[in-house]
Image (cartoon, rainbow, N blue to C red; front, side, top):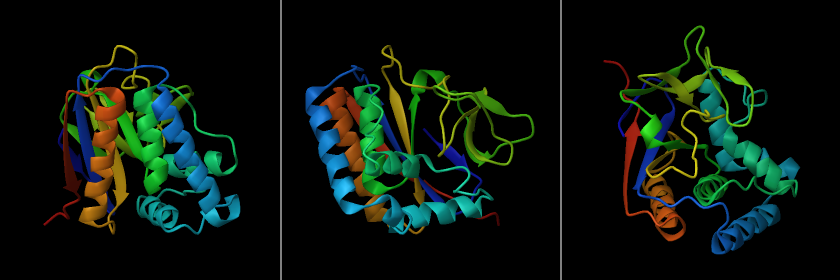
Length: 221
């Protein structure tokens, strides 16, 4: 999956997995989810979370895009706040759980998409006037002026909330995960994050094959 980046301050990590098996409950993964959540509850309080380096870096990235991260909270920060408050993560399926625990580990927003419902070319840009999509489990998300992934059929995902069109279903077989990493993140750190996702998609999602690569914003000449 190639993505044209039109917004500054971000590096995208792309992890593709083929022939995954989507299940609602995976006991081994459930234990790993609880272990990761427990570590984050020990590491942060609700008050200290705002001062964590990854949270601050993502908030800076949002401000570069003209977004107020206190009003439109990055998905990673929203997940971390739930965990630190003792509410735990939403449990949807093994593939979604892999996405969520990987996001709270790094503190960066992750997006997760069913490849069969995404149609290239794909661009990461500000939403245009009148653009919107139905959010997963929520109301319509109006994306004008907000960071959004857009394919040939229109907007479908963002580092805040993804769409029902491209969400993971039990019938999903091929998935693409997008890591929205702040630009100062090192190549090594982003590669490590992608490798962790790929390993989990194989171990818990029985992925037949995985591929990973990073995409950077290129300033106009």
